Length: 360
Image (cartoon, rainbow, N blue to C red; front, side, top):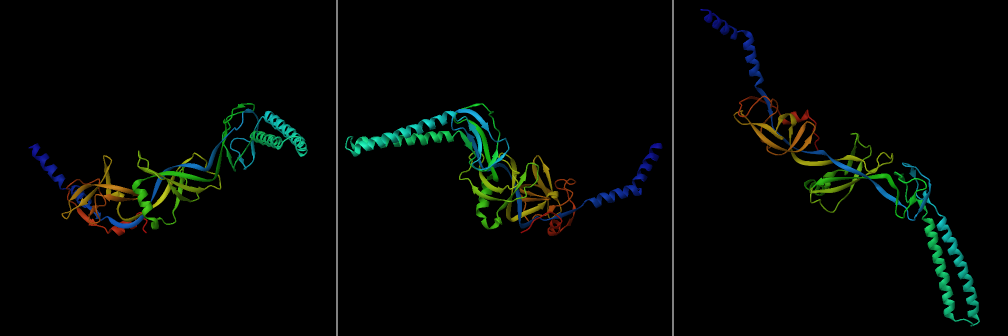
């Protein structure tokens, strides 16, 4: 008898208003928004990791052997073209110049005497020619000695910033030894690699490039305030990566950028007839992206898509669906394959109007 009473009570509870309310909520939750992908002309901003190089960056090396007598600059200092940077002890080379100059004077005197004798036909013309040759040789040796002496003063070949100075005063410097590096940072180059398909799109869509300007995102995620230009493309693809290097030039009047920095070049890429869907209409499973396609019977079927580009709030679909497919817009985490749903269609233009889409 007690068991019958309990059964009746449970049955009565199931008919309470609360149970009815939950059932209605479940039925209401089964109504989902659906829409279609859209095909539009748009553009995306692609980022490429880049290496920043000065327009001119050279190693400054000693051209003569000797002791480092003077260092006139400091690391990180800005110098002007022609400014003296280092002096290597010049005493030996000064002596060589003095010796060669003395030999020039001796050769001049010998030439005068030989000429006087030649005028009197005491010596032959060949001896006079030999005297001229000795003088020319002495002068050449003087010029060479002066050149070696000038090498003891190391000057800046152009305006730039001094890098690290590894040697100290009094160090014995060998010919060809590194003294420092010099960078001209008035402009900088940003080198970045582009895939073969992107390269072909870039080269064949000249009219769609706009002004051809690119931006540079610095390592702190702040953009450089000056835009750059893509100036050159290298002549060959890298066989290992399938990429080709682009070079963009950026002005650097504030001297913010230095040789060796890294950043990301941001380049605008036009897309014609791109198939666009909202990101919220997708879900990810095992590194693949899926959408739910709704058939004519309002049943949902998962379908793998290939995303070619990503934008804020949106995906550009490379393959997997077309603009004729009806896709589930919301509730992708609540349904399963072959579920039958109640759908509410939303115009794709109205859907995209609330998302970040740049149209041409």
